Amino acid sequence: MIFAAIDALKEKEGSNKSSISQYIESTFGDLPAGHANLLSDNLNKMKEAGELAMVKNNYLRPDPSAPPKRGSGRPPKAKDPSSPEAAAPAAPAGPTRGRGRGRPRKDPNAPPAAKKAKPAAAEPSKTGRPRGRPHKVKPQLAQNVVEAKLKNKFLPFCAPFFADLFA
Image (cartoon, helix red, strand yellow):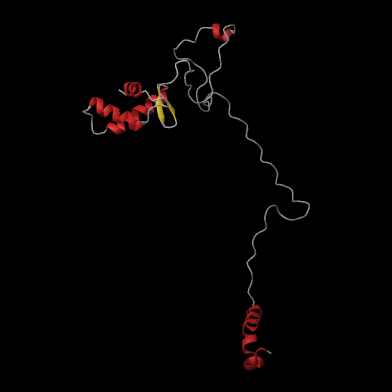
C-alpha cells in the first residue's frame, strides 16, 4: 500500500507521511483505528531496511543504482582466498576439551605449597617520624582561653561600666 501510494502520487521530491496517509484512506477506505501508528511504524521499518529513502521529511523509492545501505559499525575484513585459514575446513561442532572459563581447580594430589616468610618489620624512616598523615590532635580549652574570649567580646561594649572587672 505504501509503495502504491508513493508511485501514484508521483511527487518529484518524495511524499510526506500525511499525503501517503490521505491517499491510502481515500483509496482503500475502511482502515483500522490505529492506521496512523501502523503507517508510521511501517515507514520507519522500510526506511531502516533501505526499501525507502527519506529526504527532507519526504519518503521516496531509493535509486536502483545506489549502493545498498550498510549497517552501523566497522565492516568485516575481506577474506583472502590464498591464505591457509580460508582454505582450512571449519572445526567440528562436537564438544572440545580445552581451557574452561574461570580459575583452574587445584590438583588434590599436589604437595602443599611452602609458606612464605613474613617480611621483617619495616625500618623506621630517616626523619624519625612515622609514615602517613599525622593523627588529628584535639584542642585543650583552658580557662584562660575562655576568659580571653569573653574579654575580647564584651570589653568594647561595656568598657565604661565593667572596666574594673576585666582589669
